[in-house]
Image 1 (cartoon, one colour):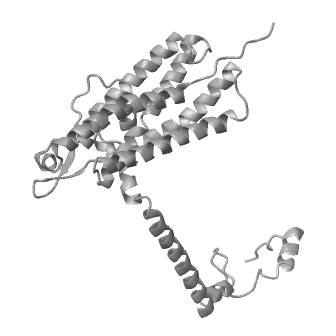
Image 2 (spheres, rainbow, N blue to C red):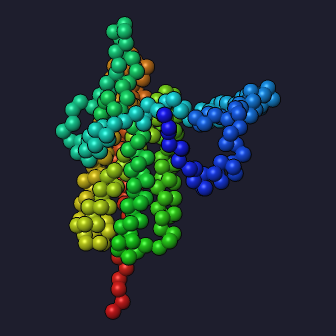
Length: 301
């Protein structure tokens, strides 16, 4: 039986076939696998030794960084304070702004297999647990909101962003140093209690942001200098102070029998005084400094 001849090959395809020296070479697979030459390179003992040396160097550097970083900050303990969820963040912000009718304030503890109370639950499982996600994000938001509002009032200048960030970071550092000094004077040696105090110290930025935004809206761009601004500031300050007073009570003044016997009566009195001064006096000074806003510049007629 006669069959028709095969179709002619296009000229472009012929040029490509003849021009490509790797087209018909044996050993070159067309399914996308590695060329045998590269496989031989990876199987070379010298290359394998180089990979092992590089891997060992990276692991040694990572271990060195972790050891030196853990010398100052316990990374594993910090992970507990960033274990949050969206529902927790929303509920916690509402609690900081409206703490008046919240019950209870005690933190929840996990029950071990033996039936005894163990470690505290993470923030995502307990709204009374302190976290560091909200304080960190609130501090960054405060810096941005403060400069944006200044720009809307026409009081922005290039140095304002750096000045606002420097003021916020300086207050945070001074407050942390004051907390470490207070922990030393009050004989608080537990590291988790210090981290709890650091976490609670950052919740004031939530009230400061509300003060700046609401005062800007109600005062018509005059900042927080008018009586409306002072009224909003007074509410946010009292809400934050009440929140700290009720929350820190379980950190500085333990109520269970085991911890109560370890804290002397005179020590409890000093901790009560420290709790009141820190929640009201110290927070009032820091919140007032952070919430000061320049009014809009007067226009010359």
